[in-house]
Amino acid sequence: MLIKQLLSAFCLTLMLLPTLALATPIEIEADSSPLEEGWWVETTVDQNKNSIGDMVEFHKDNPIFLDEDNTLPLIIDFDHTPSVDEIAMLEREVGYEHQWELTHIDALAGRIHVDLIRETLNIPGVDHD
Image (cartoon, rainbow, N blue to C red; front, side):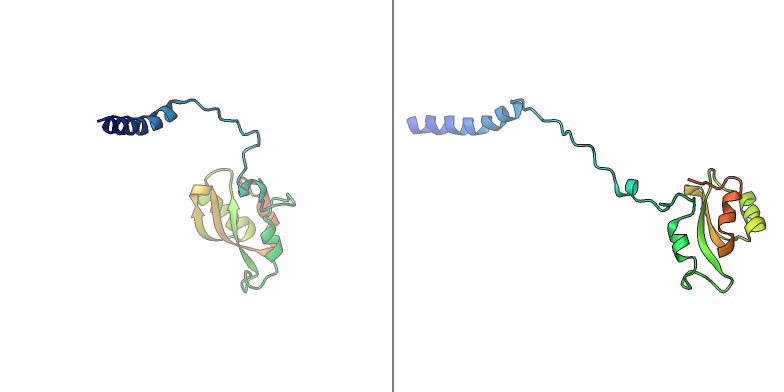
């Protein structure tokens, strides 16, 4: 009978110890190191800050991207959602060849002659950031 009582007490202890461990308060040290920022914070597409993506400048003479009319595929960012008016203005001002509207990021995708890329910065609403 003593063995049964000891075994019962042991089993009860095994069941209650995890509960007691959960009820015991612990101290958590605050991490004093700053939160790590994502790669996109340190990566920039315009390191020279001239409002034209560095890859565009790097590849502007690359025959892989240039077509027979010397146009490059570009994404043109706007400070608002562009409409048919902006497409028409780009076509008129810089000979833009429209391909896609990227409404979720307020941008247009198309082709522009390599010598007129900088002129797109003068179009009203084109984002310079």
